[in-house]
Image: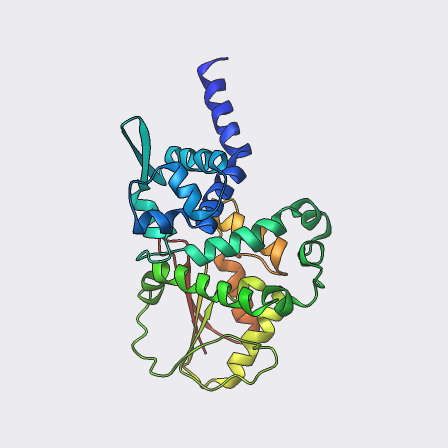
Length: 297
């Protein structure tokens, strides 16, 4: 093969093996590999396997893949491999990491990953795959997302973890000092009354719902607030041609698989706010996964 063909095949191979890479990281988190190595460094694979109750063969393979992925480091002493966490694992993959994403990884492993097994059906049918995956009706989105107390806690902790990385950039995207009473909207906001506030935060909410429901929610907020109030939306924004960023495209496809919504372009969000009655609309790209939109009544 030519050099160009070699590069193309290497990229192609990375793509077809991508799901395996994700699952290796998810599994190492779930088994407690990174937490164990955070408390005790330089352990051999057999000691790690004994401590975590796994097979020697499986654990050795898992650890060596994690080394290749630069999640772990290894040193050879006396003919034995001694493993320790890489900085990335300490930071993001341990429960105690300063920017831990542990709970979100478990949610993605147990829920998102399972739903994506039915991506083909989701694209054919245009609806989420909770019925096939968990036996939950696809029209009851609240029940599907929060199908157990354990799932709800895991999901909420995962969202908090993401916020710990992206929150500062979103909150500082606009001058919010004029708003003194702030309400972070959550729960069953289609049924529950919306209290009066100066600023409403909708963090990763609108992307769950089809356009009509987004307009309904925004109209409810519009009717509940006084002139001059604001709505701060936290979402990942698609480019206007919808051909990037890749993370936003993948998240949008995840909305197809797991919800009834999608990720949107700034123009699409502007249209939703206009239909709900809001006039002043601004957006800012933060450079992180999540971007910011501010609209005023």
